[in-house]
Length: 102
Image 1 (cartoon, rainbow, N blue to C red):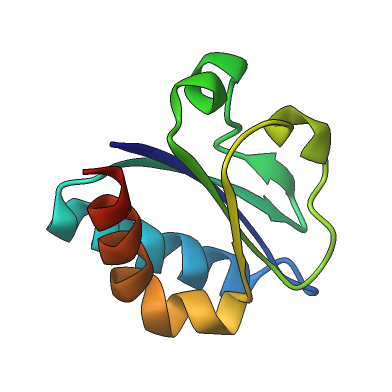
Image 2 (image 1 turned 90 degrees about the vertical axis):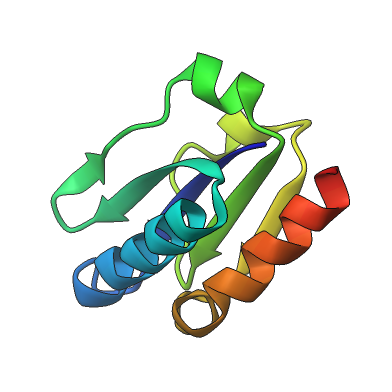
């Protein structure tokens, strides 16, 4: 299973990276392939390219502000959660998505 994610918070600093780290750690622990793009004060980092998005089974958006370039995800299965929720519940979310795709 392949998942891509975008994280962004109002200040674009701490919670953006905390949610990215939480997702990456959960993915590693669960054996899920994941790439996380962050959209913070320094712009878009670790940008998802079109082939990564196309190959993804799911797109996880963890944002409390608008995600830039949303049109890239048109037609994909998208899951939205708040930044605070994903920090606490990334394991549960990824387990659910993994079970759904098997």
